[in-house]
Image (cartoon, rainbow over all chains, first blue to last red; front, side, top):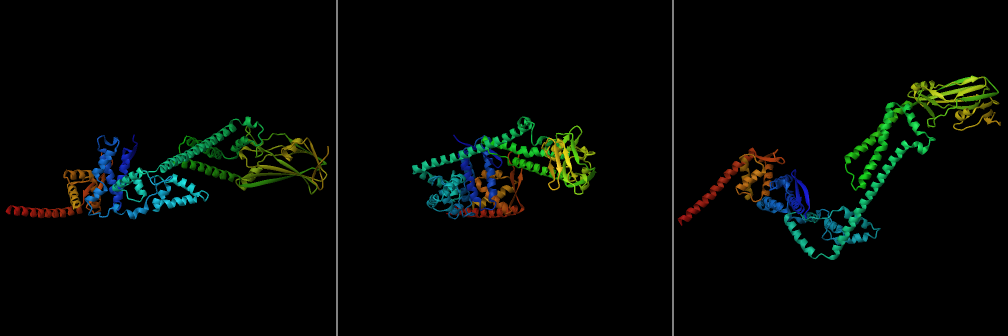
Length: 499
Length: 107
């Protein structure tokens, strides 16, 4: 049985048997070695390769037939070995590369030497390269094992990294000898002599070494599969979690979600411009689901033992993801500009003095529990916000109510306009003050962090009676009282009265 | 010696028209001038570098594009010189051999 390889010479594809290929590549490297000092040497090799292709294509059967060793031998006879070529014009090139192997001896390529090895041939290979005795290197390696096993790890790494000199051409390269046909012949002859006296220990270590190497490679493959499984699981997990959050939020959280993110998301489309809202959605999907998809894809590839190829696609996906981030950031900055300035209006009302002030908030309104403290009515298109009320001692002995309307805006004037449009009116009926429990924002104003706070100034000794809604909603956020009665004291502010 | 003759032959072949390496090889083989084909390529390269030859790439109907070699003006001049030298050589050799034959006949 022979292995067949596919090569192309001068743009034509040939199937070539393993041994034929080795001979052919040794022949071509011998030629390029011979012509390397010649001006235009590479071009000569290219021309000769073109001729080889032509000769191979001209065989019976054409370029479809598998190239056998006999075909290659015939070609070498027709084209001639470097020695043949040198023989016919030796007066031009008196110095042949094969006559100067000593000068090139030290510049051999680094291969593992299979002929002189004890374990993997690493030491022998390096010794060949450095032109020293392999024994010295071996002793150094063994000595270094006692320093926390440094050399053992290094040896394993080198074993994997350095290729084994398999072909005769590689062995010659390893020893720094030029690849010529006569050297190849010489090497093969020497090799036969060596293998006839091969010792059993070396053979055993060879087998054991290759087995170790195979196991190591399998280990790497297995860990790749493990990483793959982990990635795939992570990807699936995130997908399932996101899906269940969207589909079964009621089941998981019930209706009592502390932070109502879903109504928050709905609110958001009234806070930002429609374009930004769309951008937010698209970029959000890219930023979240692209890595998830990548996890799944790589996971499955690794799990099935494929290496992940197609660098271009990966770079493209990374760029898409990064641009998603950039666009989202830009949209964020753009939207943030609508909130750049702050402004407010202060409105002061003087109230008739009374021993007891009755404060009531109407109606009790369930306001959504979102972080913006706002509520959006789909039917009217209005926003509702929660006002706050503080009660302080008046310094001048008069009763008065200060209403602060505040808002953000693109400009100072814009912010002022938004603040001005906050709808809120306190109904004063003698000693009864009726506070609406929410303020309104007209649809055309959108939500710009409108905010309304009130300060009620009362003289010392005034009794305040407030209803439940006012206490809970306006004065103390999210805390419920059943009827509250206070008195304004001189030093300690409001004090709760016993009922 | 053989190399010089081969160069002369290449120029002669090309003086009869442009050709690509396989053509030249076939012509040289017909004339039994070729030992191994590999000899031709370095010679072509050297003659090209010396300005005696030039080549151009030409698409072929089958397979990859081919290098077509042609002889330059300088190549033609050189060829003429070589022709003269060759003729001289042939004359000299003939003269020697002719005289030898005459001598042999005389003795």
